[in-house]
Length: 211
Picture 1 (cartoon, rainbow, N blue to C red):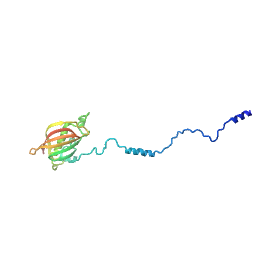
Picture 2: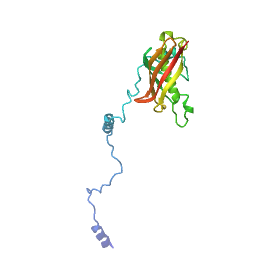
Picture 3: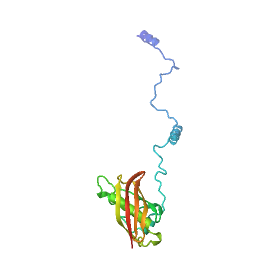
């Protein structure tokens, strides 16, 4: 019995004390500096051009020879029938160029038409007539709530509608005096409405001045 135990002890292998155990992969992530990476991302974003066109200057206003206050000093029209927002150019007794900004808030769109809002053609003609009235009315005759003189339609000839005018359009109207009978206060004018480069409406207008 003693010899068996002694033999077993002699056969036992003892591992050297300086032997290294096999390394196990650690599941812990190594922290890395991120500040330089963030700076590079910000720099790359700054160098990237924004998509689309530049908005600056895209909605540039047309110059104003007459603003809405000056227009209301001459025209007797008021909401919802004042159809000129601005006058770009005017030479009294000769011509004028006026602007109407068409928006969905205009009171005629809910009924014309609910499913497809279009500015009524007769209102384009009326807007041109109001610009024509500014050509005929003298600024020195302005009064409270419009000039003391009035003007009326006496005739409309050769009216043609070329394209629909819809919310978001800017209607630019040019009205030129072609003939004036001062004795009877009758003026004939050529009117045109444009949306951009496109002709939307044109007509020959006859206006009569009255007191």
